[in-house]
Length: 366
Image (tube, rainbow, N blue to C red; front, side, top):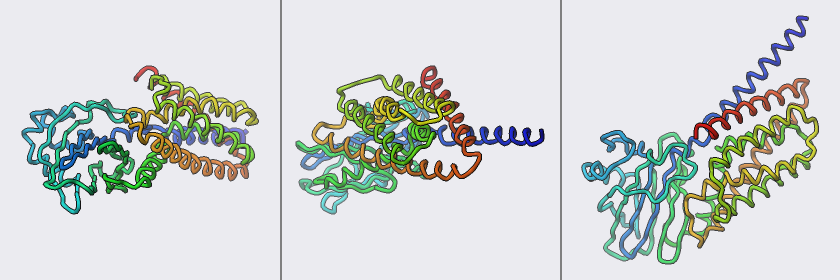
């Protein structure tokens, strides 16, 4: 009897710890998108227009009425201080000569950051104008307008010049880029990093991967499962980003929550991972729509869209491979212990609870 009570308490503690672990991983899901900025940069012969959409919290000292958006009057009143502040954070250099901003105007954003948890009202759009006395032939940009200590913050930039368009990503670890004749490797590496960060901070996708692998199996079979998931989500990622298919993001997010809950529930009663690769393929089609939302609203130009998409997809796969490898090694180690099944079940139970929370938020609180 004491042994049975001790076993019951251990099971209860394991389930509780599992739920806490899942909650600690999943609660901040996608919150980093509130720290995303978008920059459209138009390069002309001697002038540059930089349309910047940035979280107002980064320039809150100029938001007099504290409504989380800079108005025309606030920009006018603080014109000089805004110029000084932004010239410290954003520096454009042509052939070694730095240009200060001539004027800053409040504008209406033509696009909003993708996957944004907060509403667009939390961002402000500013038009920054630059001028050089000589024609611009070489141009470097330094961007450091990030929330301190937030390593997932970034600025997604589109550079328009004549008949060429480049897409770049500025991060706290990558603050410099060439804007004219930028090497193709610069764009590819930017979007590979973006893809890796997206999967590593997409906690719903991480929990889905963990749930897929929870029943275990030989490495070859697990690779088959993950490959099926990768192939299917790559298909819908490209189709959605190319605007060939379009599904309301709310329904996509609801379907993702349901897929996570179903796979985790299956782990509690299914003993063998048979036919799991078919499920992975089917649900991967849904998750691909979720991945595409990170790029779809950026309105990436068709001239190099395939390069951006392919690089972003490679980043997702690299980040996904790291997660799968870590989960496989952890599950292989757990099999050495008698309480292996209890731990796997308590993790699945925690995932079920988290998927139910997401489902409620996305279906009734969106």
